[in-house]
Image (cartoon, rainbow, N blue to C red; front, top):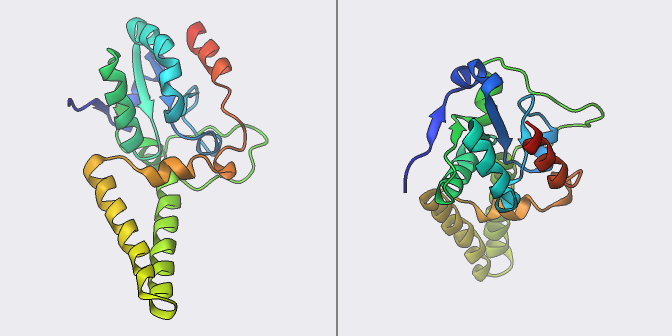
Length: 191
């Protein structure tokens, strides 16, 4: 498996005018702040966009972005398996903002949704604590809940994927608006 090309935020900012930027986060995360001009194609819908992304990659460079860089690396690998060469933004929108670059927030956007990594940490920690408490006060078998989460976190680190994030991405607060993939793909075709 090849490692995707990586651009740091400074390099990406210098090349914004020549890049097609694809943000693979959930619609809620995207609405909370994204690189200006980025197209929201959630990771779970990337396969539908393959023909248009293939065309975009033939006419210019495609930069794939997420919150920290992990999902965008996975997206780049998937796209590479389909013959589409892309780059990923090192550190994602978190690094972009940390270097003082603006994130665009659509008008009317209410409070920002927590980033997916933060949601995963909260959920995993809560389930571990629940498993330990129930194991202590109800039945020792509930400790298996904590062990299951620990095993899932190890698997997540080894595979650089996260099943919990995939489940959390489907919750209503992560989809305050349905991703309008058809409109996004039309913008991609016209860029």
